Amino acid sequence: MRIERIETLVCHARMRNWVFVKVLTSEPGLVGWGEATLEWHTRSVLGAIDDLATLIVGEDPCRVEHVWQMMWRQHFWHGSGIVRATAISGIDIALWDIVGKVHGVPCHRLWGGPVRDRIRLYCHLGGGHMEDFYETPVEEANRFAELARQAVSEGFTAFKAMAVPPTLPLEGLAPVRAAERCVAAMRDAVGEAVDIMVDCHARPSPAMGMQFAKALEPYGLFFLEEPCWPEARDGLRAIRQAVRTPIATGERLTSLYQFRDLFAAGACDVCQLDLTHCGGFTGARRIAALAEAYRIALAPHNPQGPISTAATLEFGFAEPSFVICESVHRDVPWREDVVQVGYHVDPKSRTVTANTLPGIGVTVNEEEIRKHPFQQELLQRVFYRDGSVGDW
Ligand SMILES: [Mg+2]
Image (cartoon, rainbow, N blue to C red; front, side, top):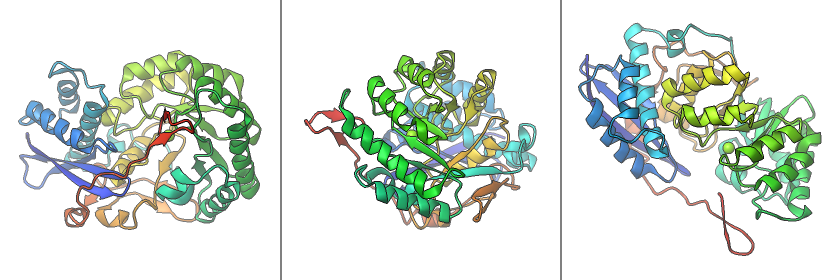
């Protein structure tokens, strides 16, 4: 069997263009599906996948590690740049989907079988509705509380909020108190049995991240995400040592070597590797093994499309240290029309039981995808009060 062709299907989903990767084989009807979504870099990823195809068309799709090595090491440049890493990831997920189909088992059964009975999902405030999650101003603490109650009424036992505003490298008390009021309002609204996560989106400087972390510590967050840039490993470590709140990061890292440096620095408690950016299943499983050596929890980043979620869950059913899966259900109303999945979500508890179909268990409706062709993603930008540029 050989890889015949690699196709990409773009599905515009408001804030993101989902990039679905279809690997066709010489076996009639045998194809694998992956996802390589990279918001605001869609055209770059499509080109990178075309470039990678020149290396691997004609190869045996079941020699996944061998093909992965080609994609990572050949063409001179290693595969850690975000565009190439995302392209490699989408192809790798599709190759494992093929291997599962060849053997007639879900991917997690290829890696030793399920290590748990169910996986807990958490949602974004607003369920992934862009304006609710990313654009609710921190001045509106009551709105945060209202959205928190809504998440719980939809069955979620955990949710994440963007309750930390963008700040200059140094600011006074106002943004810190605003964040604190939002988190206090959410905790008040849902009580202590529900887990709350706050995503700082890697915006704060280490000094501001420290202030936010200290201010939010009394509210018992499940984790505090990206309290400063991932490049600022010393800042992450200092914050982690200063508060008892678990610190999460990793969604912007693309290689085993970056995760090695993160873990060795003692800079996080929770690893948010993203299967669509860190080398697919092949890369993610190596990173998970390394995380195991540090007893670091895995809570993958997963705000993209439905194939990313199916892949992340396959990974989770095979990884002992997997604690929770990020999920989005209200980004677009037709999410379930474009991809049917093999796993089952209990709407009362928002827990997932494993897919029983071969591979990653997805059925892709290409006709539905064609109803949502590429459009430029909506821009999201941050400028501070003084006009200077901030991180989105
Ligand atoms: Mg994040």
